[in-house]
Image 1 (cartoon, rainbow, N blue to C red):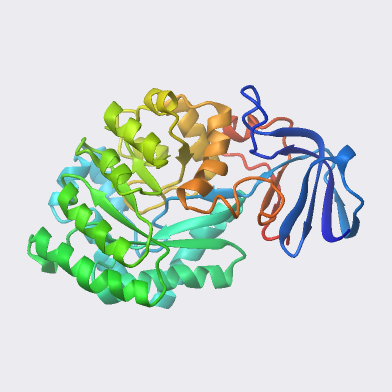
Image 2: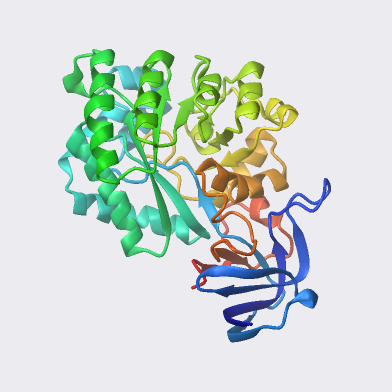
Length: 403
C-alpha cells in the first residue's frame, strides 16, 4: 500500500478506549500512516500492514494524540475589556457590569466599528496561540454584532481565518447572546429579529454550522431560546446552548429537549438536567477559564455527569470579558485543579468529546482509519504531563490533514 506519510517509533493515545482501565486507547510503540490527508492506519507498529511511504518520520519515542479541538470560543471580536477586569477586582460583579452597559454590549460597540479585515487581523494572534498548542479544529461564535450585517461580518471573518491558517473552523451563530442598545429592552421583539432576519440571512449565506443562545437571567428566557431553536431547526442547523452558568433556569434540560449537540458552562445544572442530557446524547462543555476569571464558586456537577454517563468536553471559551484565554493546556490544568477531573477526562475533553460537541466525531477527535490525520506530537514521557504542567508547552509538531 502506498501512503503519503508514516510516523513510526511513537507512543499513541488514540482516544479509542480499550477497556475500563484504558480510557485513552494507549498504544506503546505505535505508528500512524496517512494518505490524502486521512488516517490509513493507527496502531501497534508490529501490526503495521505492508506500506510503502513517500515519507517516514521517526518520532523518537514521542507521544501522539489527536489534534486538539477547542469546541467553544468567541475568538472574533475587537477591543478588550481590561477596564472591566479592574472593576471586578474592585468588587463589581459580572451582572452589575453588564447591567451598567458594560459586558457583552461594550464588545458589541467595538466589533461593530471594526471592518471585517480588522477583525481577522485582531483574531489571528489568538488563533495562532491556540494552534501553537496543537489545536487543529476550533469553533468560533458570533454574538458581538447583534444585528444582521454585523453578525454576518463576524462569521465571514471566522471563515476567513480558515483560509489564512491550516485549521478547521466551525462557525456558530449566536445572535441570542445579549440585547443591543437599540432594542430598547424588548427581548421578545429582538428574538423575533434573530429568528426572522438574522438567522435566515446567515443560513442562506452558508455562514453558520450551528446556532447557539444564552439562557440566563441577564440573557434570554427558556421560552425565547425555544423560539431560536425552532428557527434553527427550520433551517436544518444543529443547536447548542450557554446554560446554567449563573443560575438554574433549566437550560441543560432545555438543550436536551432540543437534541442539542452540547450544553455549555453548567455550573448550576441539577440532576434532572444531567439525566436529560445523558438521554439526549448532549455533551457537557465545561469552561474552567470563565469559572476562574469571574471567580465563580459553584463547580459544575461533575459527579452527576459521571453518574449518568454524560460526555464531558473542555474548551477555552476564549472571549474578551470572562475568559481572555488562549490555551487548552492551561484549560486542562484548571479543569483538573478546580473541577477535580481526571487526566483521562481532561485529555478526552479536548479531543474525542470536544469533537462530539461539534458533531465532528466522524471526522476528528480520535486516531482511527478514515478520519482526518490531525495529530499533535508531544515531547512528554506520559500523557499526564499535558494536564500537570502550567505555562509550559511541550508540543513538538502539529499535523493538520496529514501536513
